[in-house]
Image 1 (cartoon, helix red, strand yellow):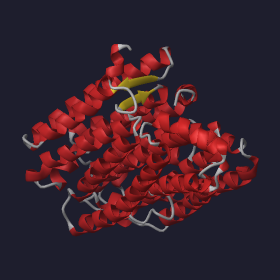
Image 2: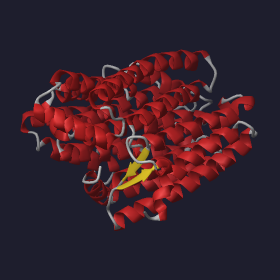
Image 3: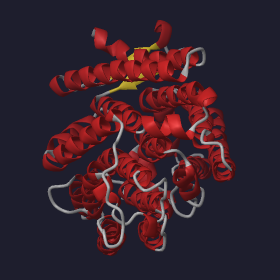
Length: 493
């Protein structure tokens, strides 16, 4: 194996070690360590990605060189390297842009503890992307859940505590369903490594045995991950959690945490069960209906919201609907569209939350639209970022969201039975997206009878927002390169 094959393990280990070390540092030093660790992981992830682009392949890394069934494995190809690179970039940029709010919203005695949780959260995301072992995946699902709850509650007020409790209850229900599915899989196959399970499942399915237990397993896994990733109707926890947390937390939760669970579910479908078995089951039809309803109802909820962060959070419900609709088509084109939408949403939604936080800071820490009039003049870089993010989410050409919706439309045509439902819901949702995002843009650029004195941002905020803006424009112009990597990577998933 090339030396780069060690990088996935290095990333997981570095972030966990940084989490432990941060507990002994001051808040400022914990931030510096976090930036260094994430920068190192981003460099390693990009190196692995470029290697995979040049030599597409699948690499299995045995922990301690112990073979199956005793050993634990990391397995990766182009898709995993791409997702890890995007996650590293988004986490680093979100925390740099949100540094000011972190140090103002969180008690100084707890800032280093916030970075402990952030580092553990990032380690769990890497593990969900790279692991080839189902029980290891469950362990890091729980680490992810507890870290995410701590990140929400870091602001320490009544709203965040209430939101965290709701988040924790719903998330633990999802974790429990996922654990039950692993128990049933182990009972049927005697394996925990994904590839070994796939071989056993294929034999059982070909023999026509255990059809009902396998259906239950797929249902438990699918619904469990849907609950944790806020698919309708399991989305009620999302808006309070994302809307009340500090800006960096909202960015990370929406841009990354939701996606880690979906990436794990896609790996389970490809690597554990196989698309043939998944396509034969009716579970995908349930996800399809929930995804369509999420696209519409999430957008309607966003229209009725007058709090900018909660509006953006409800928009995420609609975006989760898009992703699950792509998955539920049960075709390679559908999974390609879903993964690309994950990347687009991960790059765009944290920018929108960061922009909203910047405009709120410039408006006396107010988040309601009638209090944000003229905010885009008080904080110009936040206003520009909000426009770009809004146009992307609407699906305007030359912005990243257009490519995501375009490939979802193409994927719909590979499943004639679902095609017209997808195209209709996509059209309706796009119109609804335009309604609430254009309304928001109109409010933040309204300067009638309001103070438009320029707000001075911290340097870290301007750097983070500038990087987000450039990255989103580049993704909108050159998305075909990303799609090609995903298309190649699906062959090795």
